[in-house]
Image (tube, rainbow over all chains, first blue to last red; front, side):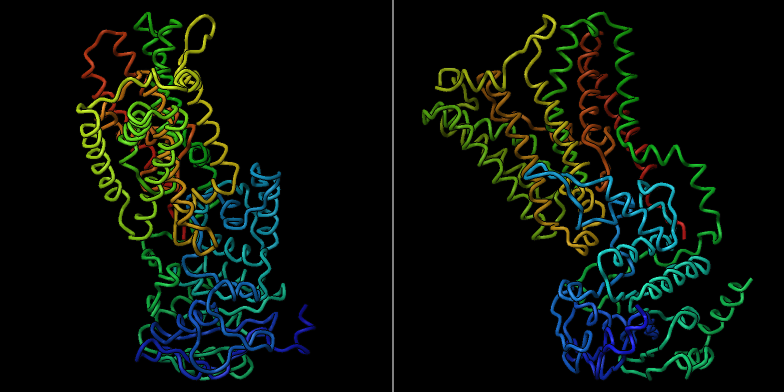
Amino acid sequence: MTEERTTEAPMIEVRGIGKRYGSVLAVADVSATVDQGRVTCILGDNGAGKSSLIKILAGAHPHDEGQYLVQGEEVHFTSPRQALDRGIATVYQDLAVVPLMSVWRNFFLGSEPRTGVGPFKVIDRKAAKATARQSLKDMGIELADVEQPVGTLSGGQRQCVAIARAVHFGAKALILDEPTAALGVKQAGVVLKYVAQARDRGLAVILITHNPHHAYPVGDSFLILKRGRSQGFTAKADITLDELTRQMSGGEELETLVHELATARE
Amino acid sequence: MSTTGSAAAGSTVAAPDQTAPAATPGASTDEDLGRNRLADRLIKRPELAALVGAVGVFVFFSVITEQFLSPLGVATWLDDAATLGIMAVAVALLMIGGEFDLSAGVMTASSALVTGLLATEVGLNVWVAMAFSLVFALGVGAANGWVVIRTGLPSFIVTLGTFFALQGLNLGVTRLVTGSVTVSGISSAPGYESAGALLASKISVFGTGVQVSVFWWVIVTVLAAFVLLRTRFGNWIFAVGGAAASARGVGVPVMRTKVLLFMTTAGAGWLVGQMLLLRFTSVQANQGIGAEFQYIIAAVIGGCLLTGGFGSAVGAAIGALIFGMARQGIVFAQWNSDWFQLFLGAMLLAAVLVNNSFRKRAERSRR
C-alpha cells in the first residue's frame, strides 16, 4: 500500500484554509498534507484552533477560506457523512461508543449486518461477533469476550475499538481527536501503538494532541497551531523533539511532560 | 475551543471525566476481569436478579398458603400479572431507550373510552371503534415522542403533562357525552363477541380457565425480547438510551427510534385498555391513574436502569409476575393489603441498588 503513496496526490491536503465563527477567527491560513501510510500530528495548546481544524477536516463545519483537497480533488464538505463517504473517519474524544453496550454491538452500531428476509431481518450476530473479534485482533487487541460491555474496557482498548471500527468500515484517512488526552502514560502508549498499526495498514492518520511527547514517536510531520495560525508544517527529519516542545509551549507544562516521559521509560 | 459551535456535532463536546487522577495506573486489567467474571455475567443477564426474586416469592406463598399453587390460584395471579406485564414490557423498552411515559396508565382508560364511546354513542362496529382508538393512541404516543425530542425537555415532565391532559379529557368528555363517568353497554354493540373472543375470553388449560390476556402477555414479551436482542431496532434502543449523542454520531436515527418507543407504550396502553373494556363491558373514566408507576416499578425490578441504556423485556415481565404473585399471595394469606405496599417498596429499593451496582461496574473506566 505504501508504495503507491509517492505517485499519488496526498490523501488529504489543505491550502491556506480558514474558518470564522462570527467575528472570531478560529483558523486562518493553515496549510498541511497527509499521505497514505503516514501520520501527521496537529499540535497546539488549548484554544489553538485544533478542534476547529478537525471539524473542517471531518466535515462538521465547512471552511470559509482556502482549499481542502482529498486525493487531489477539491472538496467542500457540509456534513460528516460526506467526509465519511470519501473515506475520512473521525474518532472523537468521547469515541462515540455506548459504554453499557457490548463490544460487538458497539462495533456495528448504525451499520448492523443483517440476515433474513423482509420484515424478519435480524442482526447476523454470529458474523458480527466474529468480524468484531477478528478486526480487533488485527489491531493487536485480543478480547476473551466481545460480549462484555465497552465500559469495562480500559481507555486504550476503547480507543482501539473505535479505531478498528473506522478501519473496518473502509476508512482511508483517520482523524484522531486527542486520543491520548484522558489516558495515563501506559494507556497512552498502547493507543500510540494502534495509531502506528493503522498507519502500517496504509491509512493516512491525523493525530491531534497537545503533547509533543506523544506526537513525536509516531508522527511523520508536524503542524503546530497557535491562536488559529500555523506556526509551521515540518517533516520529522527537520525537527527534534526538543525543538517541537519548545515551539509548542514552555513553563510548568513542559516540566510535567519531562517528568511523564521519565516515568514512561521506566 | 472544543465546545465552540458544537451544536451541530454534539459528540465533539469533551467528556467531563477527562481527568481521573484517582485512577491507579498500571493496575492489571486481566486480574480484574477474572475476579469479576460472575458480575460480568450478571451484567449480561439483567433479569437474573428478578428471576431469583420471583422464585423466592413463588416458594414463599406456595408454602404459607394453600390456594397459591392450586390451578385457580395460579390462574388468578397470572391474570393479575398479565395486563400489568404487557405494559411493563413496553415501558421497559422505552426506559432502555432512555425515556419515561407517565401517560401510559391513563392511556389504558383513554383508548378504552374512545372505543366505548364510538361503539355505544356513535354506534360503530367494535372493531372499527378499536381501529379509531388505536390511531388515537399511536397519535398521542407520537406526539409525546416528538415533543420530547424537539424540545429536549425531560420526558418525565412532558408525559406528566400528557398524563394530566388525558386524565382531564377522559373525565370531561365522558361526563359531557354520557352524563356520568362511566361508559358501559358495549356488550350490545356489533362486533363485541368476536373482539371479546380475541382479547377478553378464557382459555381452558388442564380444565382451568385462564384469561387470554396471559397469552397476550407471553406473546408481547417474546416479541419485545426478540426485537430488543435480535434486531437492528433493538440495538438502536440500547444505543439511544445509553448515549444518544454517540448513537447519532454513528448514524442511528435517534428521533425515529424514540418516537417509535413512545408509540409502543401508547399502543400497549391501547391493547390493555381494549382488554379491560371488553372483559368488564364498561370503563371508568378514572381508570389507570397511578398504574404508570407500577409499570415503571415492574420494569426496574426486571433490571431496567432509570438512566436508560440497560434492561430487559423478559425482566420486566418477571417484575410484573412478582407483582401479581405478591399482590394475590397476600390476599390468599388473608393479610391486609397494606403489607403489599411495604413489600413493593422494599422490592423496588433492592432492585434499584442491585441495578445501580451493575451499572457502576459496566461504566467504570480503567484508565
